[in-house]
Length: 225
Image (cartoon, rainbow, N blue to C red):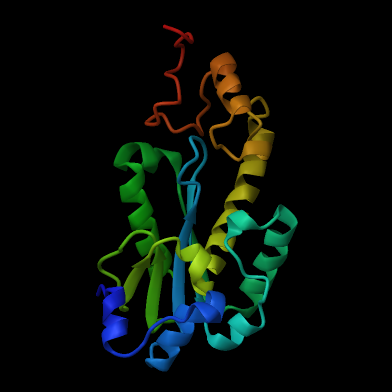
């Protein structure tokens, strides 16, 4: 069930910028739609490693106890780890799914992104009153939902999901770094950097590279061919 932002306005519920990251959750609580689930992903822009999607359900009490919530990209690794520990302890519910490289190459990134959001929602033990997804609308959820542009910067539940997804994926990429030490996964986490491009040119792709991405060379292909 998809809702538009205008639906909240029409019913007298408008997020107030002064409320910070809690604005959407406060509005939805006043409308009787708490607790709120946020869904976000990590690894969409990487050319190696899995896509990780998290759903986190927060009520207003949990949000008040976590003042360090922010978009995961704006936090240092240490701050993300601390926020992650707080989220998994205080959230009403949370669930993480991992989409492997084989599915990304076989189905396409966007299909996997949306399907991952559905799976993350389906894995929740509780049924939230409302769902906020980062960027993309997701149809077929059993709770009313709204896609929020840059949701990880404006909604606490989406910011929490971004942190859980990012920390989970970073840990996975650190493990992959031990399996494939030539590529520097522990540093760039599979994203396209100069170091990563040079390693691909020298060693070719490993099994964790997304072959459907144009920046990943075909095995055995010499650079410049």
